Length: 496
Image 1: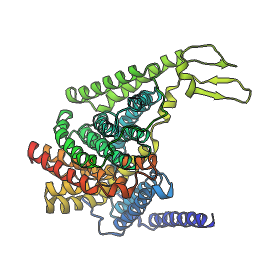
Image 2: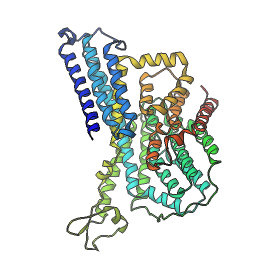
Image 3: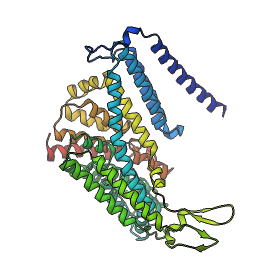
């Protein structure tokens, strides 16, 4: 405990010291610096104390993000603080050079860009959480478990479903769903559980790469208008190769055995589950059509669909059971009773009505807030001039194919969200097929390491002790082979 308190004190002192440095910088900046200099353009602060300090803050903040598994500190907290400090430094740096407008304009642009993505993701996450609340995923899982497929069949079924579900649902939810099936039938088959989890992670990441709805990175590219919705499907075969190559190699170690006995009970969807699925598909269709035909932002269609979902939630609220008083049910729909019951001190069982806002609250707010921090951090470093410098070194020296391939490797170490946002901010000159290549590599590169994607990190927590960083690393060579072959497949089919 003393050690923990000491660590907290060090962190607090570091933050306070940094705030004092920033305050002193503002107080001792000469008055002339705060006059607007409209002729000042293209200020490069990459070689200044402001640039170096911002890089240090981003580096320290991201160290906390990478260490989330060990510190248990949610990744959004350090990155939001880092974003705030970076933009304060950007503002001071520009003010010192006589420009008090550029920093404000730039940060507002980044916030507006984030707002559009935030609302889109919030709507999509609410639909996914609603389907989870209506037992859509639980019903699918129990059906798979109770079918008594062999271990090898489960291996291929979970991988195939992960590949085809993740383009609509996010890869994290898909990986958790299929991972639960692997664990339910795996039991003592250690090799199967290990390669089964790896197979699910690779399939979910690969499936998310050929759809704007499969991953945040593909969504960002689509909303930027760089790649049209139908053009993402040009990545279907390269994504399939990315999954099938390691899947085939790993399948040889899967035990040839019947499934272990499971105590799983058949679960059925709650009332309205099919309706929610239909509403989600219709919402996607409206979003795509509005963007493709009317050139309206996709978020408009998603938020409209969310409004309809909330209206349907009102209907469910009116038809959910309200109270069970000492075992006497006053309303029907007993399938909703189990997860809505709240036993109170007076021994009266009270059933809460369905509430759509409870579904919204279950959205992954840590991910949404982390996304905010990433967008602003990368935007701040871009305003300082670092991304222009990086773009020149990366794309100017290596060329687009090597640079885009390297982006995928980087996404295995650094989260693919900041990597892709940095590429979009750099905006190198590339044709559609080159943008598709970086979309592919950023989406599937995270599979190289278990910590390279949200799907891998989540499954490590779900299958503690069986699926680990080391067990994944043992098969990284097979995943890397699939990664390289998927790049060659894209270049062969779609060209450069």
